[in-house]
Amino acid sequence: MRRAAVLAALLSLARPLVAEEPPKRSAVWDANCTVCHGDDGRSQTEEGRRKKARNLADPKWQASVSDGRLTSSIQRGHDRMPAFGRKLSGEQVKALVAEIRALVKAGS
Ligand code: HEC
Image 1 (cartoon, protein in one colour):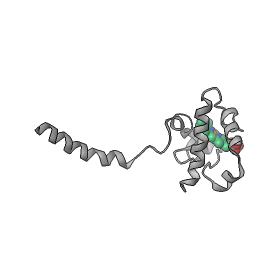
Image 2 (spheres, protein in one colour):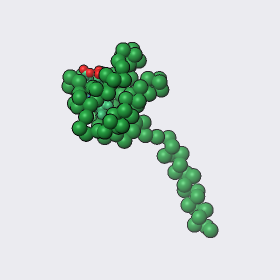
Image 3 (spheres, helix red, strand yellow):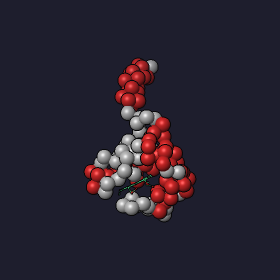
Image 4 (spheres, protein in one colour):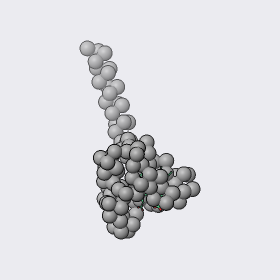
């Protein structure tokens, strides 16, 4: 009984700490894209700057490209952006395209 109460108290303390930092990006993004494009898609990472990766969260640029173009860039690569067609499934790429679109919708 007492132990349960202590546990409950500890859990209620821990929960807000965990909730403060929800993962910003999907696991697929974290594993494959963050190194260049960062958590926010703005590509301000060391690697992103070196390769001159673009700001994927730019609404003007987003409005100018189709989902088909994003899909093909991720699968086949684009300039210095590596191809992920062999590494990721079609479903995963589709989810990434949605994730890129959401960067703008979220206003970030
Ligand atoms: C090694 C660094 C690197 C990694 C890793 C990387 N990118 Fe890129 N990405 C780039 C660079 C550099 C560009 C700019 C190339 C261009 O568009 O001319 C770019 C451009 C893009 C574009 C725009 C392409 C276009 O059609 O204009 C998209 C979309 C994109 N990346 C998505 C992703 C996604 C999703 C991942 C993870 C699966 C990823 N990138 C991983 C470097 C990277």
